[in-house]
Length: 74
Image 1 (cartoon, rainbow, N blue to C red):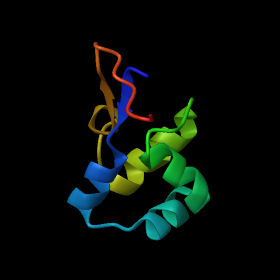
Image 2 (image 1 turned 180 degrees about the vertical axis):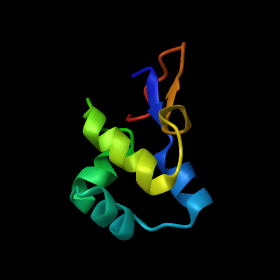
Image 3 (image 1 turned 90 degrees about the vertical axis):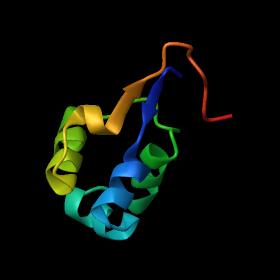
Image 4 (image 1 turned 135 degrees about the vertical axis):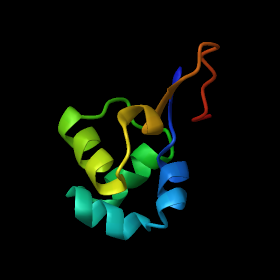
């Protein structure tokens, strides 16, 4: 998929663990893991907004477009 989720990078920059972030955002750790590992097929804007609030970042800090369409999930 040409969209890459850089959630792990932003989590490392903000020194926040997956469990803490999941709690702040209001999603399960399993769903956060799906996002973090580029396995998600979609993300709700409300979840993206909550992630940006919790990590004090912009959506562009979390999402990246890869024009070559490299699939990182394989």
